Image (cartoon, rainbow, N blue to C red):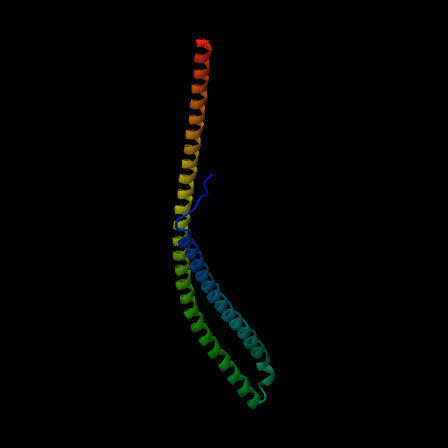
Length: 153
């Protein structure tokens, strides 16, 4: 019995590789985005902690000035991190579109493979049916010849 061989299997394998690379790139961007988000959350906690401590430092102007500088630095970090998050979000969107396109391309070749396999199975069944018909015809012809020989004798 013949084995199924998909002529475009190497192309399909290549499409799988491309899709996996795009998936990894997307995961990398999402990971970076989550790290930035955690950084902002940590900054918010620090800011809240400093705001709670301001009342303690209200009597000492040097310490109050130091706390205000810390708050200003944290606020600037928030602004920078939010800008960076926006850029990463854009990269995520681009990576997601790229991944979806690669996935679509791979699915096209998988459908072609499925269709080719269905055609292969259909042809296999047709060949089997031809063989069965041929065996059946030979059997009946042999029986017919035997019957004719018996009648002659």
